[in-house]
Length: 275
Image (tube, rainbow, N blue to C red; front, side):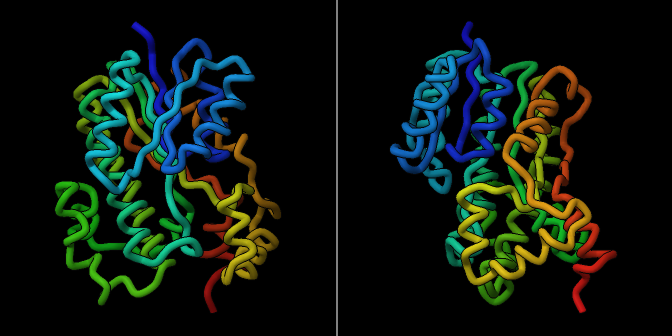
């Protein structure tokens, strides 16, 4: 049976990971915009990969279910790379929560029902989740385990609690890593694994939106003052993704990998610490 790797979000990071884990497999590349999927698919096809495309809106269960059905028709789903999302400069708080938090929970829920034994998943979270102050144990549990369709009704996610796009993004990304921990238990019953990667500033079109947006000065400061002294590349994230999805990562599941050039370290204990 054909192994299928599903990539949700046709951007640079998803492509970097899929190129490392999909030789000899079928890649199903999904994006909310068909033209984005087509452009990425052409690059992969011209590089020797077997690719088909689909559209998906991760904020709609029917759309995610349709993607699952399309994947299962192609073969057994041995890998899921979830790299779709919106940034604080791209959307209001309610959209960020619906796409980045609810959408990720939905993808994990639906693909967790079909992931093959020996399969693996990677969710792209963010360093932003590591800059949110600690939540209570109860809040952690709610974000990790609340049934997907009840998630956005949590009191902690209402407009009186989430007051700007950056806060919505931080909560969403913290929620992604917590959700993956809980889902790792369920996926493990199928003999599969799932982890998150929390990248820092990786030069992609999304990052360029941020660098040229209202928070651009803060982003440039993070790059200048972090221990690495530079931004990252999609290929560096791809290397970690390949470890997590491959046989060398077989003992890793339910984990979150922060790779941000030391921005978070400098935020808590260095020159980027809030005054």
